[in-house]
Length: 250
Length: 357
Image (cartoon, rainbow over all chains, first blue to last red; front, side):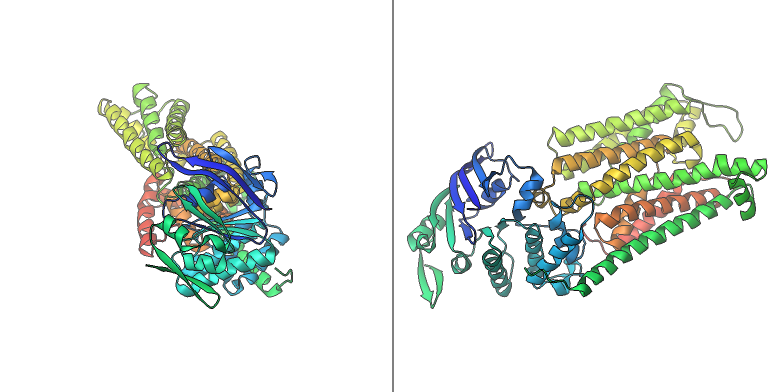
C-alpha cells in the first residue's frame, strides 16, 4: 500500500471543502477522482502533499506520516502536477531537472542528469531536450510537467486535471502515458479528472466526490448511471463499444 | 526506465551549459576592460604605463593618490554596487513574480532619501562651506548614511511585516512598495519645503547617486555584504527556479516557499539599503541588468544570478566612466546617467517583445 488517507478534513473559515475522506491506493493503481467543479478534487490532492494544511486526518505515504516528514522528504515520495502552471524560460531538460530539486544540495550530479535523460526518453521527449519550454505545444508542455514529477522518482503521482485544455490526441496520449508509467514503474497515481470517458477507459479505481465527501469509491462497478447522476445531477446512460465504456448524457 | 546512456544528448546539454558559462566569462572580461579604461579616464591625465606603475606603488605621488585613493575605490564601488543592485532586482523580480520589482520600486530607495533629507535638513548634518563652486557640503556624512540606512530598513521592515503578518500576496507587496515609495517622497518634499535653500541643495545633492563619495572602508563594508548576499542567493538558486514554476509546484518540490521568499526579500532589501545609504539613489540597474540577461540566458537562476550580477557591474562601471568623462572636468551624478540610458534601454527591451517571466 502506497497511500492511506484517513478522516481527512479541510475547511476554509466559512465553509468546509472536504469532509471525512478515507481511502487507500496501492502500487499500480490509477485512481480517478471525479466530481463537479468545487466538489473538492483539487483540495484533496493539495492536502495529501501538504500544499494545504488539513484541519484533521492522517495521510500515510509508504507507511510514513506525511505530516511528520520534511517538505524535501515528502517531495521525494510524491510528485505533483498543478492544474495551472507557469514556468521559467528554460529548456525542456532544465525544466525536468527541476524535478531533481529534492535531491540536489548544491549542484546536479551525474546521476541527476542521467535520470532526467531516462525520463525524457521514456516520455519520448528526448528530441525536444534543448528546446525552450515556451516554444512547445500545450500537449508537449503537459508531458514536460509530468516528466518533471517523474524525475522526482516518487511513489505517488498527484495530477490535477492533466488532460484539461488538451486536444483529443493529446488527451489520449497523456492518459496512456500515466497508465503506462503507473504499470511499468510500479507507481500509483491519484488523478483529478473531468472527462468521465477518459477516466473509465484508463483508470482502474474511482472516487466520486460530492460536496466534499466520498459518494462512492471502488472499481468499475461504482461507475454506474445512478451514481453518476447523483454526483453530476445529469441523467446518463452507459454504452459499451467493444471494450470501451461510453457515458452518454441524456 | 532503462539506464542506458545516450552520450550525444548529454554532450549536447553540456555544450549548452558551457555556452552559458562562456557568456559569463565574456562579461568578466568586459568588466576588466571597462575597469582598465576607467582607471585611465579622468581629469588628471595618466597614461597606461603611469597607471600600472602607480598600481604597483612605484608611480609619482600624485598618480598614486589619484589611482589608489580616488579611482580604484570608485571603480570597485561601481562593480560591487552594480552587482548588489542587479542581483537584488533579479531576486525581487522572481520572488514577487513581478517584472517591475526592483530596489527602487519597493520604496526602499525613497525611504533612504527621506532619511538623508531628515539628517541634512532637520538635524543639520549639511551646511555651506563656501559660496564658490563647492557651495554644497555635507559635514557629517556618517550621520547622513546612518539615517538613510535606518529609514530604508524601516521601509523594509514595514514591507516584510505586511507580507508576513498581513498575509500579503506578492502582487500586494509590490503595490504596497509603490504606496510606501510615494509616502516617503511626500515626506521628503515636506521637509524640503520648509528648509533653507542651501540645505535643500545639500539634500538634493545627496539624493543624486554618486560613486565619488565612497571611501575604502565603505567599499569594504559594501563588498562584504554583497559577497555574503551572493553566496546566499546562489545557495537558493534552485529554490528560485522552483518558485518561478508557481507556489504550489514549488511546495511540491520541497521548497519552504514562505521562508525562501522572506529571506530573499530581506537580503535584497539589505543590499539596497546599504548601497543607497553609501551612494545615493542609482536607478534602473536593478531593472535593466536582470532583464537584459533574462533575454540572453533564459530564466534559469543558476546562470541568471551570476550573469545579472556581472551585467549590473558592467553597466554601472560604464555609466560611472561616462559620468566622469562626458563633460569633464564636471563629474555628473551616476544616478542621472543610469536612469538616462536605462530608461530607453528598458523601452527597447520591452519593444523587442515582452515575455512573462
